[in-house]
Length: 294
Image (tube, rainbow, N blue to C red; front, side, top):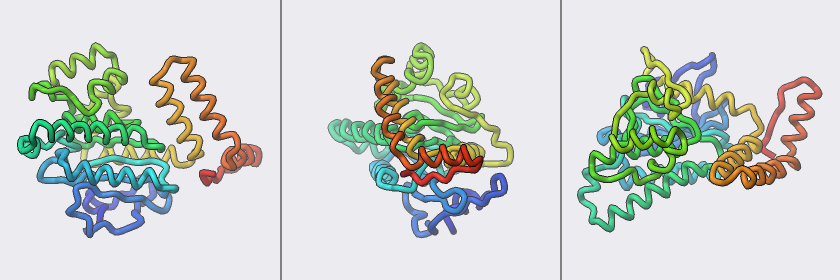
């Protein structure tokens, strides 16, 4: 069975068939499956969570494999957009693997959460845009993974929430910091204090996700919408997109004056590129630019 059949069939979107570079049938037992799409979708990488029986719970091995997949993106010269999704129907990620956690000593649990925090930072600091496709529940650490991404797309009935206080702990992989920076801090506090579970449609109203899409008969609606967004990003200058992400992310951490300095520094890096000259030439010649990331 090929990778995309494990996704639920090869899907034709806007007349273009999503095809992979490689056959990942040998990887069906892996917790995380990495794939780079090809043909018209060249430049899109898909990271699929694939721990079915445990509902993609964050185990030591899943975290390791997810780190490995992200490392592949960091060293790639061809990836322009990353899609993070689940290959398990009905679930994005159920959060921490509590069965595994009960076997850990206090020190081991502390180190594991520290590793989770590092993983979320690695997701956030990817040099290219990363989009979380939530076609199923994202709870606890699962939602924290999504919050570390640049964009989030959810099915309208997808369940999500930072539920850690129900277990007498707190969101420890960035949830207490990223959610209040994304939405009204008072609303974020309410969601965390109450551990309330909410749906994708409400998440869109609150500003937690960019889009909430109806599933209807299409089980992968959020993923397909994420592909559409990725396709809108692909034609743009890859260096420009990377520098825009860097400028935004750095600017959000500092005051306006310092942020403008970051923007200036990032802009300076696009000035000498061949892509910038190609963009000007294409505009003058009234044609589609052909960017190479140079």
